[in-house]
Image (cartoon, rainbow, N blue to C red; front, side, top):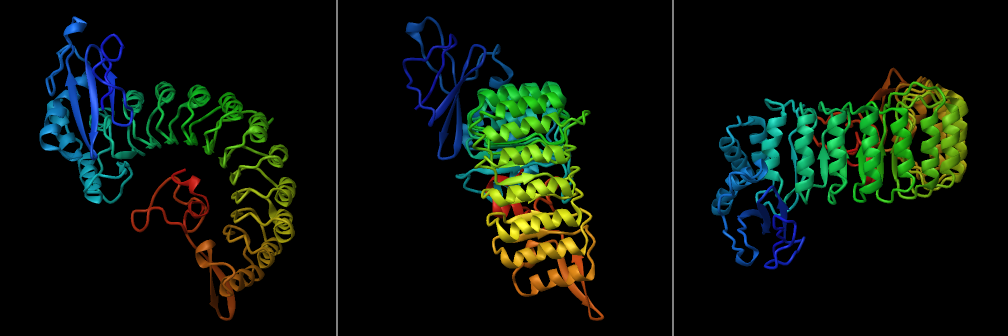
Length: 498
């Protein structure tokens, strides 16, 4: 029932290890046991006295004063939890009181709301303590606030997700996060998007993931871990075999770390979704794209790849397409905000003729123009029958290219999502897409334009629909995971939260 470690690292004969029932953590001269009973965490402190033949245990006894801070905080809170089965909200308030740490009212409120959503606490819940919540008074989470939160969650069994985006966690907070990842055995989703974590914090979190066997999705988006921090994560990917989704977008990664990650990912068998958006690149030689292409030639597990703002040009697209001819796993390719022209799209058109795996292609904010749109339309009309979503917004496409894309949808019944706003929408385009919508071939929630008529002329208005509109933010009202604004969620579940 229990798993106990004595202070010399040996397993006590009195207990048989069982990782599914409880877990023991060694902490500087004392033993902490975490036991789950029907979703309620019970914490026991056992004091072990030498010599070994006279080992005894005392349940619910305060640990010695020389114990570590973590054990002392756990000991304080465990007595109340055992006797009254305190809620997370009350545990947090008590932990703050006993540690003389001012409580964060926003954390307290969100803990209370989470419990209302799942009163029984019998299934996994995600605590959403995002610092950009516009509907509530927000006191952003600091390093000390997170230390208190980690204290009550470290041995928790029903919190499986933790969203701390847009707070003010620094490298000190990352240290608490690293310890938390080592202690917690149930967290699957951890969002640290746009905090103030730097290179040192990245090192601590990456090393914690060397031994973590439960986390499946980590978002470090927007933390300036830079090139060195990226190297720590590359090292982690050589060891960790459970992490399935990693977001390192807007982290100021450099060429060296991109190459390291690509090299490691060539042999990684666990990762399904990888975001490397907006690195800091100074070379025009596209070395990182070449290595990513080699990665895609060898990797057989990655389903989703984001390469937004990589300064990718036609040469890089050619190398990437050459690799994807042999790839049989990638379903979502994001090449938005690059420097791809009609010549580069010609290679993508050839890829679509031969690749029967890719389902989502994001080419937003490039410059493919009419010729590029025609290359894509020919491949979609005559050859490809797997691509479900195509995004070509802001690509300097005029009526000729847009009408060609609309015509391809009349013969290709698989392509269901298309996004065209930001191009030159002349009357021919308006009529073509209006006809697709009115005939039911294109559903109104599967595109970003809405037809209307004025004085006998057709026009198109913009809709807030897209593949991942809510990547950086979530709406204050309505459905958070709105499939109309985040069509990638509707097509491929692996895209969730990424």
